[in-house]
Length: 248
Image (cartoon, rainbow, N blue to C red; front, top):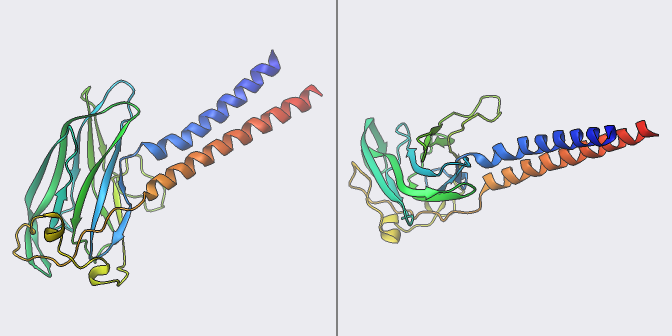
């Protein structure tokens, strides 16, 4: 009985460690893909998991940067969800190749739908022109549950590289590859997908949105989850070997 209890304790500790490593990596609101080229257009999906067992997610609010505003933003309809795109006046005009940008999208809200426990939903957005004077864009996100709980995903990345408790969705910007104008296709987004011209300007860009690719966030989550399981298995093996030595 004593041996059984020790084995059970080792197994429980290893399982807790494995879950502790795997669950945080999977639970965050993320933006996918997690990177795009500077100066271009891209299509991304805000991936929202439901973290609660006794409530559903009923509303998602994504704030867009005003220090590096995006002139073109359009959303893909999500069945069962209503979407509201809010434009606002910028603190100061931003110069672009299409003229001074005085207004831009500041917030997108999806509501009326449900993300049930154990499920996630993706909310797709096409946007650009991505800035060239920064290496990242943050999109603070508010997640509202049916019970009234509100979770703010708005923490900035930590300077030491460790993960924040409630990280805001982060889009990393990489230098343009140089393949065509701004490193992407040459068709206008308004011509290719019916997007509107930028708020506060009269220009029309000559770059098409870039299709979304695979999720780097998913790869990181799976890697961390796998690492947690490996650590758990190692803990069980070490504990079992120690018990056998004691019995001998």
